[in-house]
Image 1 (cartoon, rainbow, N blue to C red):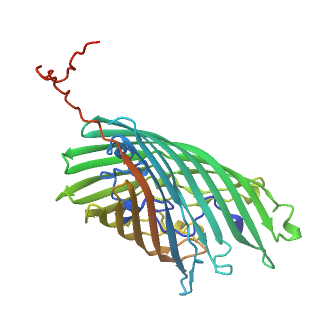
Image 2 (image 1 turned 90 degrees about the horizontal axis):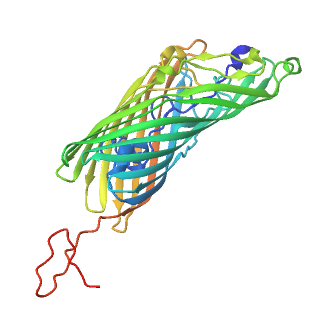
Image 3 (image 1 turned 90 degrees about the vertical axis):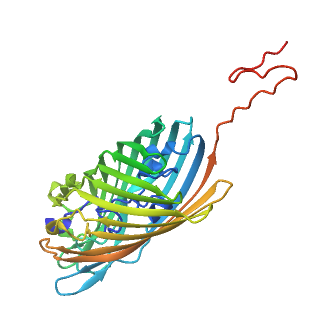
Length: 427
């Protein structure tokens, strides 16, 4: 009985973005450059990619809104060659950013984004229906950052994130002579912190950027709803409360940005994710007989990102990028309620900016999920697939320039006042 009741609070059946279940396509510009922007970012999406970049624009303000449409096609192939793909769905995690240059050296930023999550839907009657059927999980972050330029070539930033996590899971239950279903729903609040820096190593040519975001502890509380339970099992299997503890990993990103020919910018980044804290999936039911942890034992990962941005004209920019993103999952714990695969991402993008301050960025990624073999007890096979991501960001930037000093007009017959002094006037 316990085998088919082992459940998870972080189920994702479509691993199409960053390794595990992290989402890093948080702006149209960065999506087109393969997220290789931590040293180059100078718009309000710096709230996510490197908050120290918030000082790059000086005084003024900027707002940006956008969405990333995620279209996965994940396939499971059994040892006998039978293949099953996920049902077509589109996930649309949004992003909203704002920055305000309070002083030439000081900027405040706010970001709202979804750094973890996805959704998946396997067919009703597929071979793994008692392990995974349908799921959705998201974390919504509200990130507030303060950035300060300590030196003309050095900026630092610090921020706090308020995290809201939600989850909904449905799966079938096998009662031998009949079939039931269980639906889980829960939510949690959490907090984490971030710090960042940006250094101009060679004036107007070479930059270094990096940031760290701490882990987030989420204590999910929710309910389990059962349907189709035979009478003989209803004394043990009934609607009840559930809870689970999930730790979202610490992440770090660092990279270099190089400017060539005054029109071409090249970025190279590494992103580290502390997935090794993800040891098991565990939901605790009011009836402890239904609580069965699933081992995961994930590894830490480091992904590689490279991208370029070319100013084609004063209004248009073209972008290209590539990402290598290894899976954190060992083969012996890879199961369909949380499948995973190493990803190769091929990225293109275009940007437009108008003299009025309005701008638009469009990014596209084609993601190849390399075949990942699973030796999990009871359900071995191979996971593979592809995905497309279309990310669009629209925004407005108001640049406030410092007022130029104007020399006082000389009075005929008098010598000009020395620099920095005002001429005296009579009452």
